[in-house]
Image (cartoon, rainbow, N blue to C red; front, side, top):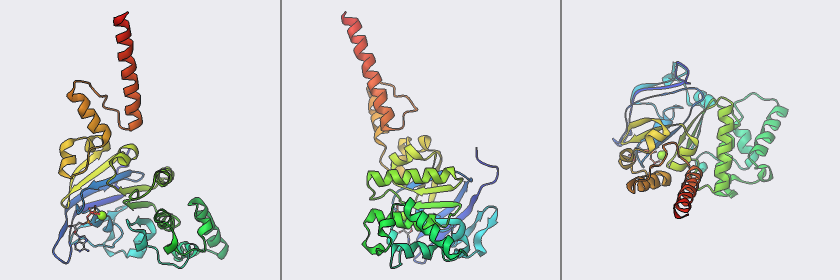
Length: 289
Ligand SMILES: Nc1ncnc2c1ncn2[C@@H]1O[C@H](COP(=O)(O)OP(=O)(O)OP(=O)(O)O)[C@@H](O)[C@H]1O
Ligand SMILES: [Mg+2]
């Protein structure tokens, strides 16, 4: 159950880029401590712009952003970044040190840690992210997936209360996505609030309980994932592709087979189908006997 007061409150926020593009139109959104939510919507909907208002990278043209009840308009990016960690879509935009180890060290530089504490934090995080063997390597010479891991590690090591990921599963293989899912679950269990921008509908359905759907600078839906993402018209509006499970369920309904509402994953769908086929074959056997 959400607490009474939102951790993040976005009130009537608007944003127009210098070239005149209106990227955010009257955005109102409350996010509560401990939530793990998704922001979805087509290219150019305003998702990245919206999350950039949360740590001061972008200051709203109109409206206000409150974090823990405090208006963040006079807070610096540095102060906000201590509590809010954003992991951007392209990891190379946030990696600039000569070695993997230095990258983490740099990220921790504003924390007043003793030499020993600093080294132990670095070792711990490199181990957690399986990056120890690349300690001396340049981030430029890591694979795409490893770069992404390092970018995440360089934010997580600061232990922010709010974690925001822009397209974390893009270009990741199944093993890396699994690592990421384990990581966010662990962070959520530690009380972190997590916001994930994603186009990956299956990932959302399996892992996120609330989805904010954006189109053309506005929020067009906000609610439980299964309610927001299975409404065909919403998906059409944002040109998101319906999840395979939903496509399949619609196809079954068309031929008169009722698909249970609570089926969301491919695994649940497979189990349902096996049971369904077993029932049919049993019935056919009974009738032919
Ligand atoms: N620096 C910029 N200057 C001018 N216009 C911009 C800038 N960055 C984004 N825009 C425009 O603002 C709108 C919202 O862009 P934004 O990057 O927030 O979309 P998005 O939902 O994150 O899209 P995507 O899914 O492609 O990442 C788009 O029309 C985009 O072209
Ligand atoms: Mg974006």
